[in-house]
Length: 566
Image (cartoon, rainbow, N blue to C red):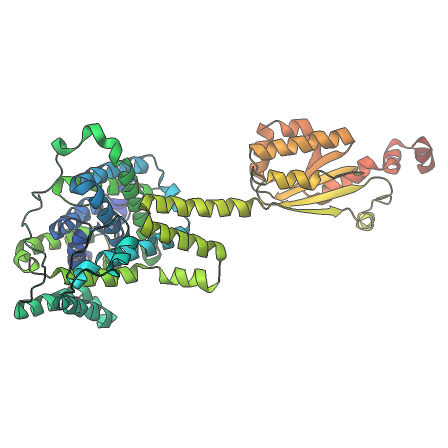
């Protein structure tokens, strides 16, 4: 499918647009807003910022990124995965550092999209993404234990150390907070799925917990005042940017960039399967970049596309990107109309939402597939990435998982399969070569796999002991690619065989490999007459060249004269 520019995407979406379709978008947008409201508040707190910051992020992200998105269904805002990254970074750099890192990440995403590099994001292996997602789910879950228990324990830079700290005691559980949080958890688990589209379980749980607390007046921490403005008092300004120390924010910016790109394109892949509409990856990254450049100046946190909200919009019948715009408008109205009510929401209620969300974040189908079929490489990659995610910097976790998978992939690709076969004279005689097998010894080597730097060792070893062979035929129909190291290995083999008086022939060379061999001058050096479409053709020619009887017949001499001359 061809690439489409943003104006083309708009034409595709809004050609024939009418009142009926707008009504569908309107209802879908309001439905998404109902789902997004509790999540925006929760993810704002989970990010180490405020509930208001999460709300502002959802409003600005839904509007700006939605209008510039690479598909009609993408809905962006604060997400669980991003909040897990940010809570760690906030402890190191503070909110100003996160805003600066988010701004830098937005610029990087914009550049990646403009340079059309979005396809490279897809190179991250599935077990790495699954392990990373499970690690993030653990970080979110562990990070909300304090709010759920109504306590405040010392912060750590590792979710694992945070979890271990709870077993050391030293805190008193607020049982009222646990009860309110449990109300939300139970509601989300027991609320029928068919009713969730009409009234989200997370919103119902928060309403019940807040109402119960309002009646009982329990001493539990609450969200606090929600500013009725999009321009928060705590926000990034140009004067606050540490221009002389930007290098300190490169690592967190790369983390936010990688996560924002991966999660947005993953969301697009899921939604594409639901709608049949392809995500324009580079345009999506441009939209994510612009949105994350703008958001810090309003006081929000970095945003990315959200699978939960996007899927709700699709299932609710949304057709265009106006769903995202309506969602932002609905959240903006809630900020002005419901701010006094939202300020009284218990933090433990948000913790309950996040804990259930974290449990559902895991890609359980993919995990069951990996472990159910016992794919050892995928299992190891998944576990290493997950453990690295909860113990190390998240950028390092992605790099470790990708490196591990890359190493295993290279190891698997390096196992170039070479099957050696001697030519069967009987079969050749059946093809009409009466003297086949009496004079020359022909071998055929069937190669399968890319001939690149990691496979050249096996290639060299396979042909090192080659002796008493008149002709060696390399059948390369199963070799899709050859690199410089492979070309050098072929060149050395040709020189070795030439010294032995052995002819080197090729059959079924793949177009890519042939192009590389032509550029390296190997076709001219070996001789174009030694390249054939099939192994049969090469075998027939090798026998004819190597058999004196065949040569004598071509020269018009008798077989006896040829043998005496030999």
